[in-house]
Length: 238
Image 1 (spheres, rainbow, N blue to C red):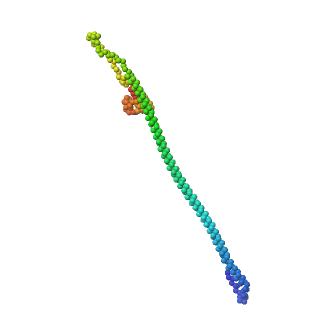
Image 2: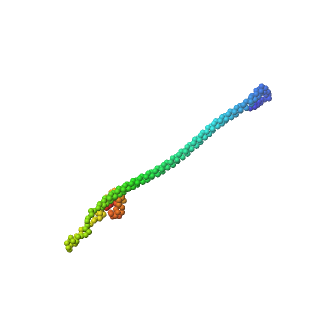
Image 3: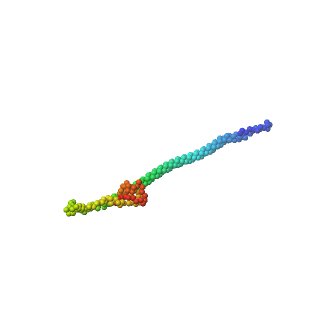
């Protein structure tokens, strides 16, 4: 600031001294010279602070940016891993369903094989029984035909009768021929009787004895194929 001289009365006014004015001018020049330097220093300090704070903020921004990118990368990896796990879970579920379907199919095939094996065994037993009955029937037939094959002793039947040997008026006696009995009639008199056991059917019994079901039904006067346990059935004629 400019200094203004104090006004004094005219009588008391004195002329300023020369040295004080020079000192004042020198101080003002020094101040004018120092002010730009201090301002520059202040501006430099402010700029340095701003630059430093800008660098710090840039570092923080870069760190936050790197952290955000890292988080996004981790999130993308987790999403990819989750998608892979979901796909693997779906594939495992589909494989499990296929295994269950295959297991059911194999179980059904196994049951069908067991049923078929049971039927084959039953048919084999039936064929075995039929073969035994057939052999038995053949043996019975052979035993029945064996007596018929034997030749009976020849009996001399007189073709001519000596009339001269007989007394007059009396007719000669003709020897009586013995009557032959039909062997089939004798065989019909003693039928074969079978007592029904639990689990037996009319068809199985008829196959066992080698006769037709219709004959067994006719011999026993059955209206149908229903029989009872303990029932006596005529299954053949001996």
